[in-house]
Length: 221
Image 1: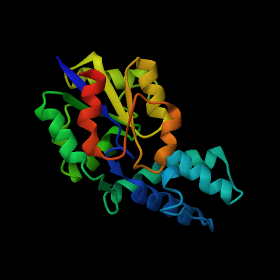
Image 2: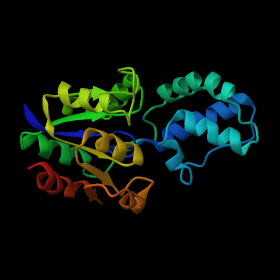
Image 3: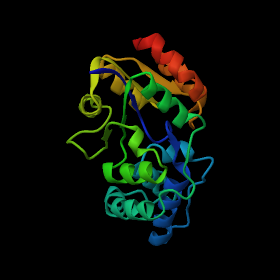
């Protein structure tokens, strides 16, 4: 088994916020609500997931209701799946960083809170699915991040050594997941949270993917 690097997807490998927000706004249009999320200002909301976007929009409209969120969440996933890669782009240097880790004999995988099927479609569409030895989504097992089980599943599936693994992410969810696993966490500053992630005291921070290999070597060898 190999030393292992596991990546979050949304906000870490790719900026998916534009397509997520488009799906949420399609829902608000369908509801007849005169509210919409802004692709730039609400990018951070988008990367917290579909339910968070619906909750935010309905709250702004003064119509927040959990039953409405529950009813429209499946429709949001449908809208998103129909237009999953219109605005989405991989962050600069992401592919090269993953390829460099593979060349250095690290196992690499993905652990995301996006539904597994949608994550598979997106990574395939972006041309990078084959770079990763594992893909664990929010619905692959009974729990999702920050529960540690999905992280361990991703490590195990790609042939990684648990005690020599780390998680690359962009949020407090990733920080909590790594802490629960007792492994290092590297957070990126190029997602919507920006430099605010430094306050989470991760073991590593990168401003660009070209810094990742050096940080990984420093943390797990």
